[in-house]
Image (cartoon, rainbow, N blue to C red; front, side, top):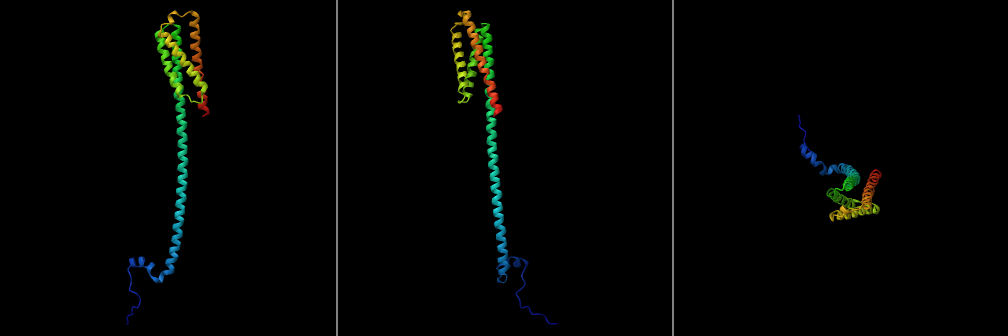
Length: 193
């Protein structure tokens, strides 16, 4: 038997066949076709990746805006809670000062007036600047309690006549009522957002 003569190229290993075929001139058209389709596939992956990234950025921006709005809403709610709590403290101090004034307990009345002044000062700083009427109410009450404290400090209350005593009690009640009227306004503001 005759052996066939091997006239073709020597056999290649699988590794050489895999990496060598794109550079073999006999496969030029195959390589070009595969290259084209791989380029189309790569371009579509790039466009798809860009779209996904763009959508995620848009979603992240929306989440950031929603988070900022929620933080602002919570901050306003905390502000309303703080100011309502401070108004309640001032009303309590004013009520106690009125009661102690009626009982002619000047030391306790002075302490209550000083507490009311502190609370009113805090309220004044926390009220928005565009709420001018409310600021005027708080400022007027604060000034009244400062004057009352000065009168108590100078022992003027021991010589107070019945008419001025009644006027002072009425003024204390009036300031207590005017400060108490701020609470529903703030609560209404909280409900309306």
